[in-house]
Amino acid sequence: MSLLKIGVIPGDGVGPEVIEVSLGILEKVAKRDGIAYELQHFDLGGERYLKTGEVLPQAEQDRLRACDVILLGAVGHPGVPPGVLEKGVLLKLRFDFHQYINLRPVRLFPGAQTPIKNKGADDIDMVVVRENNEDLYVGAGGFTYKGTPEEVAIQTSINTRAGVERCIRYAFEAARTRAKTGAFKALSEADRAKGYVRQVTLVAKTNVLTFAHDLWMRAFDEVAADYPDVKPNYMHVDACCMRMVTNPEWFDVIVTTNMFGDIITDLGAVLQGGMGLASSGNLNPDKTAPSMFEPVHGSAPDIAGKGIANPLAAILSTAMMLDHVGAGASADRIRRAVAAVLAAGEPRTPDLGGKNSTVEVGAAVLEALDRE
Image 1: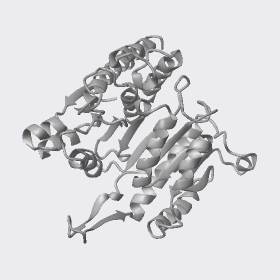
Image 2: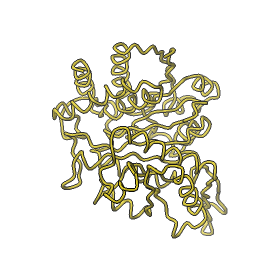
Image 3: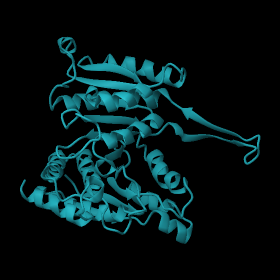
Image 4: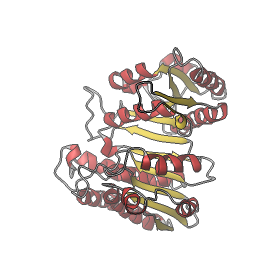
């Protein structure tokens, strides 16, 4: 592997705290596995905006584009109006860098606690493939008579055949990748007799959103025909939310729209033990621009500076970053170390019921890596 250029955006709140720990994990794994990399740090987020009025200057975006991947801590500041940083940094990078897949693993590690009664690690292991460049997030719409009793607000969902199909196809390819680890346990004997080894579930609302989601359904059916070894499944989004709670073992790969994906992935984070364990990747699968990896939990300003933020989501996001650049063995090493710490029961940050610090949990992962 050639020199890996990693853009680092620590960001706001607890972002710098968890990124510092995750970079320590990266350093150890990279040294052991011979991964050459360099870090480029970026001062982007709420503090910069409050000082300078800048969100994402073009020069900084050009520097980011020259990176291979981006590791992001968090964006969000209580002193900045909602939407300024989210649109100006997160959405802008996702759109401008064509990060059209948001990948969210939902896996319950042994030792982590799910709030779902009688469900364990064997029941919760899915991945959500969320379309990341279209739908309501495009920003099409506007106000008429804003601030008056006659106000009208319009937000339009934009869905293109090309955007929908590439997302669905990515989901089926992800199912085939997961097939290498074994068959999907929830498949029936009849399904296996048909040659299915994994499953992709389209989550939409075809009975009400009869234009946009008709497009999704037709594209799904057509793409599914190219993957005879993967069972195609469909579920309305409301039914999906119920079944993720009552029967999480029914799900393998979920593919869905930007808006619905935003919602059900947070539900997934709860299933796997909380936001402190939820990792994500904003992927440019074509690698024409850098992909970006970030913990799901956000900036958490209420605990920023206290040293108690859970670093495991950031560490697992770093593992996803290594997967993306072809260092899957190193990524698996990190995931096994995280699993070992969770299985041991301690140390744990307060969000997982413990009393340990961010640094102490990071140190435990480093020790687990030494035992690899």
